[in-house]
Each structure stands twice: as C-alpha cells, then as structure tokens.
Image (cartoon, rainbow, N blue to C red; front, top):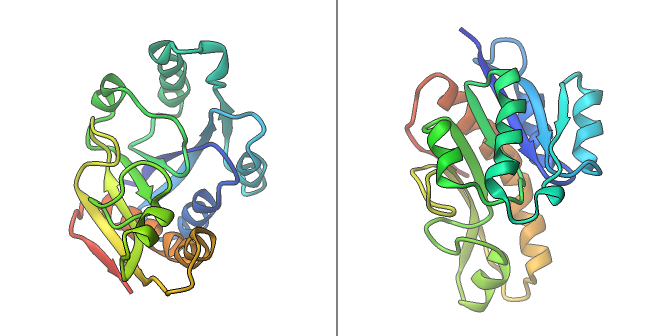
Length: 197
C-alpha cells in the first residue's frame, strides 16, 4: 500500500522538491500535501506546479500559543491523512504533544552530522571547531530538538578556506540525494541507515 506523505516547509522548498520528484512510479510513497507556516514560501508554488496540494497555517497570529498553532496544523494534516510527515526546512519547533500524535512518523533533515551541532548555524560551528568533515543527517523526530534515531548521513570535507556559505552549498546537493533515499526505505518500514557518499 502506497504511503501518504505530507511535507512541511517554511521557505524555498529545495528538499521538498527533491522528495516530491523522487516519488515516481514504483516508489512506496506519494506526496499528498505541502504545508507551510509562511504564505509567502516559494516552495508552495513549486509544489502546486508539480500537482501537489498545498496549505498554509500562519504561525504569526498565534504569537506564543504553540498549542493553538499546532491544533490548526493538525487540522490540515488530519484532512490529508499522512502516513509520514517530512520536515524540510520547517522553521518551527514542535511541541512534545505534536510529536506524540505523529510518533515514529516524522522525519527531519538537519545540516550537520548529528549528534553534533543541533540547532542553528551548523556550518559555521563546524568550521570554528576545526572539523575536517561536515554533512547532513536525516533522523526520526522525538521530543528533543534535532534528536532521535539517525536514519542517514552524508559527509563532505571541510576545506581550509570554507565559509559557512561555501560549506552549505557543498552539502545541499547531498541533502537532496540523502532525504529521498531515506524516505524510500522508511516508507517500506526499513530503518537501516543510509550513508553517503
């Protein structure tokens, strides 16, 4: 049975695009919704152009009421009935209650080699630490920020003259390869790790 996938974004949606384009004939999953907290997210139109339904739940009217915001998120998700939720540049921290509702069904991509550098500014932190390699990780989402079982990683070298921007640009194509590979395995129930290159 084909798994239904909802993808949550906040911006341009490059990882969302990689995921949607990977779900072709023979794939165990299909994108049924792209949901954003930002009505101006460029990824929404890209999703529509690929024939994927979109929805917006703006977080701003809720202020600090995360429960109210997530109640509206859940309304949109419940209509789409996803088996899997992929966070793809969704810039909101989810509450334990939201995670519990979708337990073991949420994936996230993070631009570091977890468990290193949870949170923001991952590339700069790797450079400042003198790391010889950096990369990205796909993990199952748990109550803890950027935590949970790692299902895939891609590694790239850190060069002496790297900036956060050059390192991010080198890692991004690997994000676009890794996330679809992990999703395809996850949709079949296979939790064995994917490692690139």
